[in-house]
Image (tube, rainbow, N blue to C red; front, side, top):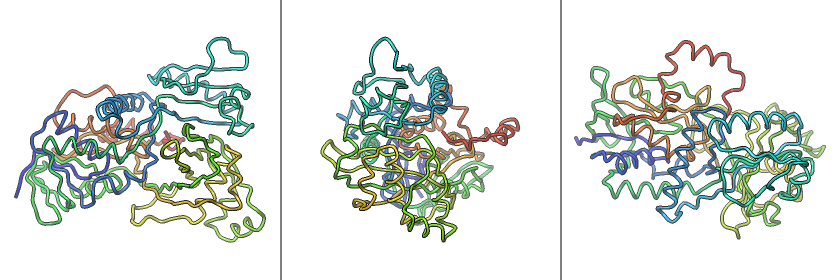
Length: 447
């Protein structure tokens, strides 16, 4: 039997960031990080690796602002070892109604602390839009001629774009390596074994048993198990209010260089129908599983350039149906996914239509979005004394890891908490008014 002040279960980007904050920032003496897999290899290395502070509610804006502050600090400390950029997210629409909604919603998000909103119309006086200048807030361009001037690869149907600026992407793997090295240098112990049991007494954590038979005596356990967060909770006879959705992404060798290497993350914000060839449509119609591909498909087909300025690769993603399931590995794949996502992206970037008859080489991977019903994370104490959870970071784990790891480390050590902390407590579901409000929710919690 050994002992630790804190045991962290799960060595994905969230667990690694948590261990970093406990060891390096808060100087907890004995921290053990356990995972049977090599760190950062379950879903953290399958991420799109993007980040943004543009969120529709104050707690998420607060958490992400803090997380990006930390990422900026670490980028300076490491000579940007994890290749963080500020290309931004570019939301694109051909719908005049959506453009009007954007103007209203963007003002609200700006007021929540995401930064100033700048609006450009055809008759707007004042400074012009600056695409390459790193800045905060967002730029809303409502003049199609300016859109074509700055983003000539977009469809000429685009009538509005919203460029959120405190956003971009990074290398999640290299970020995790940087944090893990810092934590190990400060004395973190990594144990390559799975936690299989948690002993409690008087409803408090006493020890954690690993699959190799080792027992670690501890009074604090952090459940940072990503899509397996429910399995760790079950060891405490607790159930977390989470589900998991399968999300895929495709990487293409885009040799025509239709998507410029300097482009931001591009998001088509309108629903769309795919114009399948008649013979393909007949084939899709034969199966209930593929028939839905003939219907109007949801918004948010998106993609971005990948790698250096010389790299021909692009990443493309589109969750055209909600696939809720228990996490399994290897993950199910969809043979139609590469063609579907390429066709979806060509609606926004017409030059990609050149690949319709002959798709470039692609690889498909992905992970699970583990989420709560309102899509806010779980960060805080569990019902069992000494147990904590940092999870349900649905698709935003990489961008939130720095701030979420800091927040849960502060919960564990009793440090003062930021103003946004209560919004993420697991105990929020104990409030009947909160639960009633969730029952009235109509947007599925999509952030």
